[in-house]
Amino acid sequence: MKKGELVYEGKAKQVYLTDNPDEVLVWFKDDATAFNGEKKGTIQSKGIMNNAISSFFFELLSSKGVSTHFIRKIDERSMLVRRLSIVPIEVVVRNISAGSLAKRLGWEEGRKLPHPVVELYYKDDALGDPLINRSHVKALGIATPEQLNTLEDTALKVNEILMEFLAAKNLLLVDFKLEFGTHRGEILLGDEISPDTCRFWDAMTNEKLDKDRFRRDMGDVEAAYQEILKRVGGELVCSR
Ligand code: UDP
Figure 1 (cartoon, protein in one colour):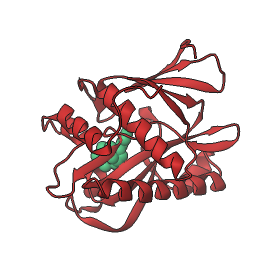
Figure 2 (cartoon, helix red, strand yellow):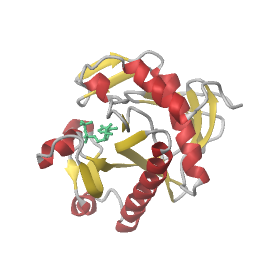
Figure 3 (cartoon, rainbow, N blue to C red):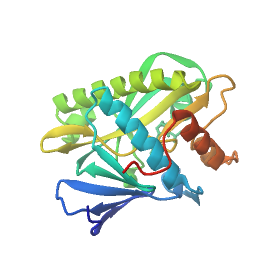
Figure 4 (cartoon, rainbow, N blue to C red):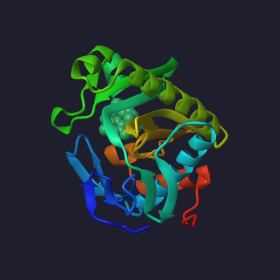
């Protein structure tokens, strides 16, 4: 596998071509941003931890029948994935009130929701990723109703799998964000699944073990990511 030209650079990852046009290499950076890029910083070794955690979760989800872009972990900071044409919708699933939902509904953080709540956000930095609904998706023409059903059904299935797994590790899955894309006509789960994109709380103490520690200047950010990696049991070394 040859690492080719850099084709995309986001806030937390770089994407490189490979010698196979169907596959790209995702390289995880230590850079951290919040509030649509207004807050910038570095979390030491975040790229290594998020690659390990994401690789672990993608393997877990694949083993339970979720179709993902993940092929394999290549080295400390990179994973090989199927090349996707991204669907510009961020799908958020929530089990416990936090962040923007707490503000929108006027609920205190930590209140359990009666059922998982699914939200859609239009992935557009210039607009600040606004909350949208099914009707907006249709008007924008960014996904068919069938594709949107697949996105929502898959997001709820991922929620079930991750919640069950994390409960055994004494972790609460408060909420998380997923991104999807199409590959040869099929919808696949893409992006990453890490403390950058999920809220994880210790089940006993409600201690935050995710990017909120960076967003809210709470300190011990690296230690929180390390704790998640340790509990998840992902490996820091490359798998092959
Ligand atoms: N999230 C994300 N990227 C974003 C916005 C949100 O990964 O651009 C994740 C976030 O980590 C949390 C969930 O989606 O797990 C819900 O985030 P929320 O809407 O509460 O926004 P926030 O408070 O993070 O701004």
